[in-house]
Image 1: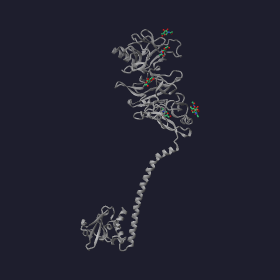
Image 2: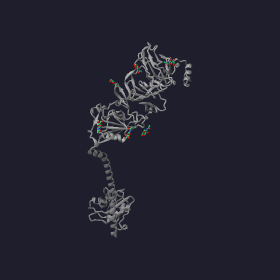
Image 3: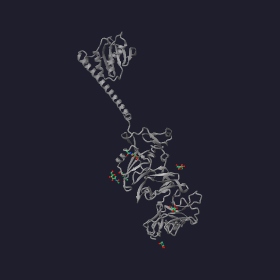
Image 4: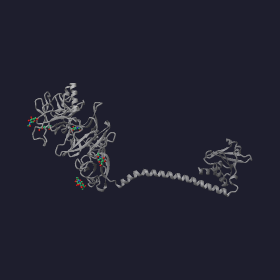
Amino acid sequence: MGFLPIHRIITLAFCAASLLPSCASDSRLLPNKPLTFGSKLISDDGTFALGFFSPSNSGGNHYYVGIWYNSIPKDNVVWVANRAAPVTDPSSATLALTDRSNLVLSNTDGQPLWMANVSAPGNLPSSENVTGEATLDNTGNFVLRTSEGAVLWQSFDHPTDTLLPGMNLRVTHNRLELQRLISWKGPQDPSPGSFSYGADPYQFLQRFALNGSRPYWRSPVLTNYLMVGSYMESIKSTIFFTVRRIEDEIYMAFGMPGSSSTVKIKMDYSGKIKILVWNSKMLEWNDLQVAPEPECNTYGYCGAFGFCDNTEPVPICKCLDGFEPISKEDGSNGRFPKGCRRKEELRCGRENRFLTLTAMKIPDKFVYVKNRSFEECSAECTSNCSCTAYAYANMNTTAINGDDTRCLIWMGDLIDTGKGKLIGTGENLYIRVNRLSDKKRWGNILKITLPVVSSLLVLICMWLVWICNCQAKQRNKKIWKNMISGALSNSGELEDGKFPFFSFREIVLATNNFSSSNMLGHGGFGNVYKGTLERGKKIAVKRLSKGSGQGTLEFRNEAVLIAKLQHRNLVKLLGFCIHGDEKLLIYEYLPNKSLDAFLFSMFSFCLANFQ
Ligand SMILES: *[C@@H]1O[C@H](CO)[C@@H](O)[C@H](O)[C@H]1NC(C)=O
Ligand SMILES: *[C@@H]1O[C@H](CO)[C@@H](O)[C@H](O)[C@H]1NC(C)=O
Ligand SMILES: *[C@@H]1O[C@H](CO)[C@@H](O)[C@H](O)[C@H]1NC(C)=O
Ligand SMILES: *[C@@H]1O[C@H](CO)[C@@H](O)[C@H](O)[C@H]1NC(C)=O
Ligand SMILES: *[C@@H]1O[C@H](CO)[C@@H](O)[C@H](O)[C@H]1NC(C)=O
Ligand SMILES: *[C@@H]1O[C@H](CO)[C@@H](O)[C@H](O)[C@H]1NC(C)=O
């Protein structure tokens, strides 16, 4: 043996000091030192342990050899050797490295229960005697190496129900078999259960969780060979999935960059595929992702042309655009087991167009057409009427299968489609639908443009009315001004200064300070009073309501004008009076004329025009 690594010296020193029996363990299984019940191997950094264990509640007579997180108290088993053949009497059962470089687990009676069946690779010495040692690495991998360091066998190549960071899960089967995680039968029963997780045997681009042989859940389709990450808020880190090629096969792996978190992917006995992270504060495993969840993400749950909408607060099944539920009742509970159908029979050829649906988990049963640009991929689908959809991705590297394009087309029903909230970012799905008929297109155009046009029209009308009003006022003013100036210029005697002006005092005296006994009546433009001038002349005074909004000058001009336009059928205007806010018109008082003559004399008419 060479120099011991420093951490092992520390471990040994610590063990010597504490004298704990379990500490006497090593990370290595040597040919002449079988592992027995009660002892275990511990990885150099203390993370993982390998040895005999018995799941609690298993009745006490079922023992297994497995690997577990050494410092995590529960749900800590990540690998089991003899899951189908438990040790029933562990007293002198052994896990031994034989001198033929095989790992053998024997029952107390010496019968082998499990064998690693190491087959020496061709490049090893022809001698069968290639014994090295088996080591439990810090990654949780139990590795049997030759004395020269070549790997003969490793537990990472024989996964059970758990995928650890650094493990590669084979997703192709060119020369070797496809690898799958296989669930336990129950929470305390490591024997193989009915659920498994691994690649689609026909298509390494996606993985399935199966219940027996039936799909239970399907992963999103790969959109990048380099790395597909998903940020996890709860651990403030990214879980990434990556694909790598080793010799003839393609493998999938996952990890968390630069993180010391304890994380694993587990095919749970319940059928759920879980990404779990150990919470060292709460001492429990937290779910980072559980699939299929909620129920509508179960494989094919929403039927053909339906999809599970995870963007809803409570995810429900919906029909893709242009489709409707086959059976109406099914829609009520958010499920369309019979799926959806086209609202309108697909017309072929130029009558079609493609709708772009974003952030989709694209459907199953695609055809992978190699070496196509996006335009070629689109054309591939457009040109064949039976093609219902296509999707495209640039995979960033040709190192995986010699092709960095990923053109997928669908020739029939679209099943197991989803939207939102999935690992992997989601992608565009282009689905074939009918071009809108002319009638519908016009309907749509109207639907959009009608409100716009009508509100515009309303605005234009309001504007026109405003303009008209203004112009009308302007025009009226102009007409009156012209008339006034015409009238004034035509008249020598009624020039500005000469038009009879009464003093306010004079009128106050005449009307007895506008006493109510003098009031003849009142109208919209003010009250009318009877009065007697000092000279004894009877007058009627129309006192215009205050705030008629008319300027003094205008009032005066109008009064001048009215005086000029006297007509024999109208009461004669004698003059006017302006005093502060007061504007008064003084008419000749004719006892026989009706009050209306005063109230609605021409001046009121003028005012009405001006207001
Ligand atoms: C090893 O080989 C034996 C006999 O061929 C077989 O029964 C057993 O399942 C194999 N063990 C493993 C772990 O593949
Ligand atoms: C195997 O190796 C051991 C010691 O390393 C040696 O004693 C034994 O002779 C070897 N057997 C064969 C068949 O080479
Ligand atoms: C798995 O399949 C079995 C038998 O086909 C069935 O009874 C069981 O309900 C299924 N489990 C789930 C979770 O779908
Ligand atoms: C990919 O297609 C182009 C033409 O579209 C062709 O020139 C090229 O050889 C093809 N490459 C492979 C690897 O098939
Ligand atoms: C369209 O695709 C179907 C199914 O792949 C095929 O049978 C058919 O020949 C194709 N039609 C054309 C015109 O390419
Ligand atoms: C992959 O390629 C796309 C487009 O070609 C590019 O936008 C993206 O940054 C690349 N991703 C990686 C991880 O290289």
